[in-house]
Image (cartoon, rainbow, N blue to C red; front, side):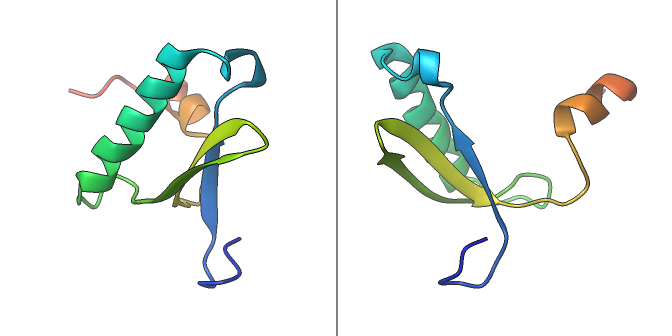
Length: 79
């Protein structure tokens, strides 16, 4: 929860075993910049990116409803 702005957020972090990889860090930052430029009702907003205790993170809009990966495996592929 973002206490300063009073909203729920999702935080994505790089897995600890990948945080020393420059390639993974670069891709993570490219992802955050790309998402931050998009505005669409079906794409979450990117609020922030940063480093905390050596790990990169992305703060984005929180979408309630459960695990997207689990949900996608239970439904048919997008067409």
